[in-house]
Length: 207
Image (cartoon, rainbow, N blue to C red; front, side, top):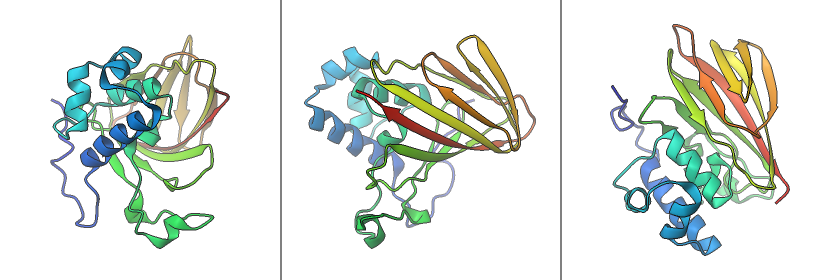
């Protein structure tokens, strides 16, 4: 049964992540001059679903979010939206994202949670996220970044994960760190009986 991202209680200071994604999707489309119809063609996500996400009527799954990111030419964490710009430390030359400014998003299909750590105002090409991945769940992401090269590292903090990239599979345990180039579909699977927790560092280079 799919997990409901709205079922868990939220602290009062937390921004609504569905609205955050909706605003960011609209902003990124407008910034690039891409219509919903064109984004649908680029991403493989239906125009109707794009409208529902932008209007806040739907919370995208991890797979849909990844497709939209590829269609827009951005990394997935970028779609989770900026934090509260009223926070003074986000507007520094070397910005700091407080804990409350780090948006947490939950996949409605698998229940996995992604917390964006990198300040939304940072100009660095490196983006950090903390992932909580439920036991027994699995998700596959497409990777089609054109001429750009995307590097990713996964550092296991707790639990275990099986990561399949192309024809290779890695069995990660607590403390392990895997470095990869995202040039083919990648599948994350937690074969254990408890939640896995890991850090993801991702960086894009080239066009």
